[in-house]
Length: 143
Image 1 (cartoon, rainbow, N blue to C red):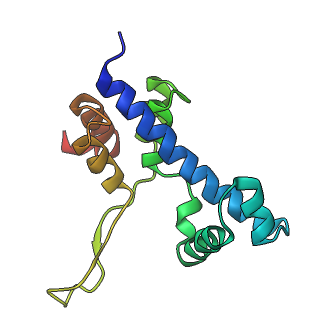
Image 2 (cartoon, rainbow, N blue to C red; image 1 turned 90 degrees about the vertical axis):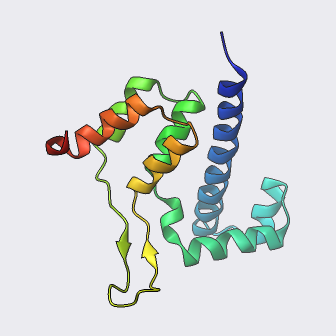
């Protein structure tokens, strides 16, 4: 039986995956030579919105890369099954948060892909057992 929690997670996942797909499609359309007006017409959004999307991609090109968060969303959107999610995440080349300016006590911290895992756990997108299994695959000696 499907719970309201799983339906809400599914809805969130589909919405976020659609947003990612829109970013990727805008970039691909731009690369294929479509104008912002043509892209906007086909996506049923405004040209200024297309401009904002393309500017965001220009400033942060990593937005187009697949992330652990997207893998988890694919599971909740029923694009992949649980075993596929666990296999992909267990083999992920995770990066970890770093202090950008180690000598500056007020310096910024750069996020790593492992932050997607802790965020997903805290948002109940993965359970404690899945989190621990992936953690054990990433840090096998810390068990």
